[in-house]
Structures are given as structure tokens and as C-alpha cells.
Image (cartoon, rainbow, N blue to C red):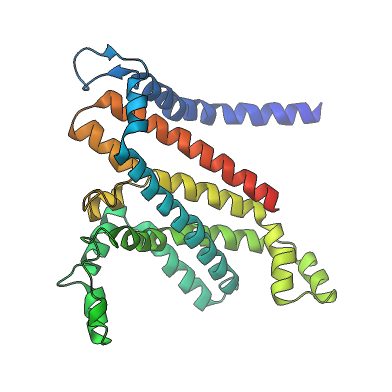
Length: 289
């Protein structure tokens, strides 16, 4: 009876949050998928065209280019943000004043608006007044100077750096909290059994925080697939669509040429791709464990 009361209390407590989530997340997704069946400019009558919008999305080379660019961002996030945050969490696990200062410094970019970060890094990459090219000149590496955001061959990779820099902080805090929650008895037992260094890391610490790592990977994938504001400020998707992402592709089709039906179809495809990638990552990480 006590267990039933506890479950009922938890269910009642979750109902308001669940209702808000359904109203503000699930309903717009379903509504957007519905609009994807129509030819609509945002105002005026809607013309039902069936699956034509979805077929056009799949046949558009620019959509697949945006998808490829998004895969690069996802890879940079998962294999950049998560390992860096995990490594820093191991180094900064102690609660000394120096470790606290470094943790706060790493987390600080998260406090800034993505637009502000985009503007800052836009100046860093500026070919004439940018800090990066000035630094290369000072080090005698002037031949390495580039048009970082104007060269299609390097612009996508230049974008990855501020994306990683901006989002390492939250994962660092998550991993430090997870490591601090490992019972001290387990750590003492490992010391007695002679587990030290990498053996202790891979046999005890990583398995104990594996669920936290899985959550971080999910957040990386979902956040990368909806990346928009920083890219829009720095390059606007250019040059020659070399930094076009799925979100900017959807935005341009919806609000630049007023194809709201087509933009709704693209947004639905983004949701489907996100679900597939998240499910795939969780399956792989489950197998890995």
C-alpha cells in the first residue's frame, strides 16, 4: 500500500510537467508534421499536396549537404566536448580554490549568449584584424594565415572550435557531480586491491558514470542537430552553403522564401533524424557497456 501511494504521489507530481511538455513540445511537432502535407506561404489558403514536400526534401542536394555538415558538428560535439569535459573533470575533481576557479572559467562561456560568442569568434577569425592571424604572424607562421570563415574548404572546421568551446562547461559539471557521487568505499576497495591509474579509471570510474556519459551524448546529438544561432551569426550558412546546417536550411526555406509547408516538412525530418541518431547512439553505448 505504501508503494502504491508513493507511485501515485510521484505520478501526480509529474502530471503538470508532462502536460506542459506535451503542449509545448509534442503538439508543435505533430502540428508541424501536419503542415508538411500542404503548400502554404504562412498566410492565405493551404493547398494539400500529400507527400510532395517530403519527397522534395529527400531529393534536394542542399538538404543532404546540410545533413553532412550537421554530421560533422555532431561528431565534433560527441568526440570533442564529451572527452574534453571528461578529461577535465578527472583533473579538476578536487575542491581546491584553483580547481574551482578553473571550473568556473570553463563554464563561463555557457553564460554568454550564442550570438555574443558568434560575434567574438567572428572577430577572432577576421582576416585583417583577427587575433588568430595576428598570432600566426607573431609566431612566424604567416603562411598558415587563412580566410577562416570565407574559405569553403576550412569554414566548417573553423565553426567547430567555438561550438566545442561553448559547450564543454555543462558536461564538465555533470561529470564532476557523477564522479563525486561514487561511494568512497568503492575507491578504498580499489586502493586495497591495487587498482591505480588507468586500471582504476576504466574498471571503476567510467562504468560507474556510464549512464551520465550516455545522457551527455544524447544532449550533444540533440543540441548539434538544432544548432543555428552561432552559425547564423558567424557565416549565415555560407560561403556557398559550405556551413549550411539542417536548422539554417529549414529557416531559410521557411522565412526567407516563405515556404512554410516545406519548412515544416524539413523540421519534421530533423526530428526523425534526431530520434534515429539518439536511439542508435544509445544502442551502441549499451553494446559497448
